Image (cartoon, rainbow, N blue to C red; front, side, top):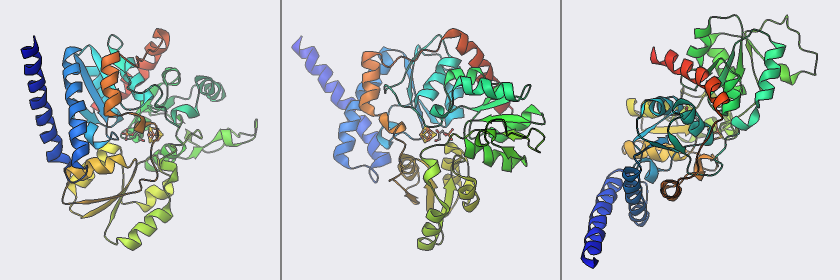
Length: 360
Ligand code: 13P
Ligand code: SF4
């Protein structure tokens, strides 16, 4: 009995060693060695649990490097991970991201157990709007289609005609072919999308009740939600960076203000930013998004320098760690549930978005 135990311990060490080598190859210039050894052991345990439970791990681009480069089967932006959640055939989906993303996976794959490794892992955008808010807007603008950013909870999606992500917002708005759309809840993504599509946007919630003039020339109706991370980047930050690093290329997420997007060299989804750095020859990049993504890009591009502002972090994405991911599989937690009547309605909106994006 003892011999078997020793043998499996030995095997465990060999496997952990190979995970350590894998992480070292990617991250030796980004993460200290003692940290890599510790993370490799946890990652190996996750790999064993993943097999035991027939699980797939989907991880957002914001996950910290040791997690990002070890256990996920797929990494990506919101749209890519939604597609994977809809297509995978394992019994369990572990979603290393925030709650609205795990909920979207459950909406698309209701027969699977979906686990979020943190109890809360919220999002300031998802928290900015309720289903009742959407119903009121629909009553105020009867017949106007509702486009909802995926950064919302299932009951808000259920009130919507179609969802969008940062990578397809303009295409989704244009696909509707209507004179007017309601676009919720990100004020800045809405303004950036209005600019890209040449539409005029209004924010009726900013006006005193009853003061909205429906004869105004508008094609988009917005809401006042904001991402607590991206709203903090300023044009001054960009100017300061350009003064210090004259050749730097600046990349912004479309959840940044239109002024910041305008002052940047590129704006796009998290995966679009990853691709941009890969495809460009410049030596320095400033990324205006969650700072962990800078580490992940730096790991793939050792010849390039990633400048980032790590005093601005997403506290929700940072709730997800390798330890929590292991515990999620060990303890079957935290199980994401969406009431069926809400899920069925939300499914229509998410599925419609995926179908439109599939044509891209
Ligand atoms: P992406 O869809 O671009 O990955 O964005 C998700 C998000 O929450 C950005 O803050
Ligand atoms: Fe939400 Fe912003 Fe965090 Fe993305 S970065 S999850 S939009 S709070």
